[in-house]
Amino acid sequence: MNISRYDLNLLVYLDVLLREQSVTRAAAQLGLTQPAMSNGLKRLRDMFGDPLLVRTQQGMQPTPRARELQPQIRQLLLNLEATLSPNPTFAPQQSQRHFRIMASDYAASTLIPRLLLRIGREAPGITLDLMTPSDVTFHEIEDGRVDLALNIFDDMPDSFHQKRIWRDEFVCLLHRAHPLLSDWSAANYLAQEHVWVSKTGYGVGVGVELNELQKLGWVDRALASQGWHRAIRVFTRNYQVAINLALESQLVATIPARAAGLANAIDSAVIRHPPVAIPPIELLMVWSPLLHHDAAHIWLRQALLDAAASVHPPAVRD
Image: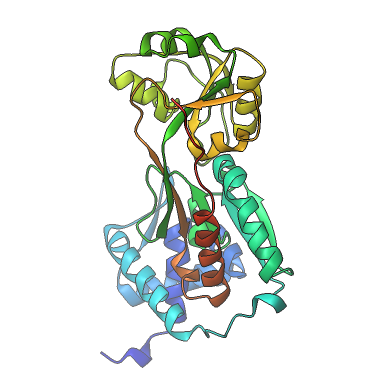
């Protein structure tokens, strides 16, 4: 086989076409006209002897041959990108890099302030664009349009790189005058009114459906597995709001310990281990393989890990 007979640029076209499953969207992403992309698809069909994408009632769909090729083409391009990308020395003090970071409220409130201290000391020209999980998609992370994602993930694409930031246990945060403190039992815990914080994911946020347990997150799934149910008075997507509500009302906030640590300096706050079993969670950092070898990106990932090491859970007095 004489590889010189083939235009290898077409493999980039194929990668985007299979990801977008649309000639129009693929052309826009590559900065091509639609006729040029259509011509590229025709040449790809000739190259592989297969239609690759066919029009159906659900739009353009890949053929079995295309589905077989997709991971192979993706990996080939990733390897080529890593081989050809220069790896210059990164100078933090001179950098004007702008990093886009998707961070859940939990990660943004606990970790990002420590990261900013590091940036202020070592890389004052760097700026951050913080986005919520509903602002971005896995597709944008995979393409490198978002530098990092910080969240608690149920699943993610196999192509992503990932690193655990920390493991965190759940604690209860409440006002020191709360009646639960006089009878710290599972039955009394369940009898109280609670404030709930969203298990954030991707996509546009929607309202909570009380009869759909899978949307209620880790605490309520753990309770349900033990045959229990708690009364939720307020649903929120923000940990600071949950903390404020718990300390200014008779609500109980059951939240990750490092989030509860935001109330450490408040005299009225009491933090205790819950009287029910709730599995811990893991905060992960994930990023695209396209950015894995980028020197500035490597520095940012290490800066995040160093910042995380300085964020300690609060002391819990039971």
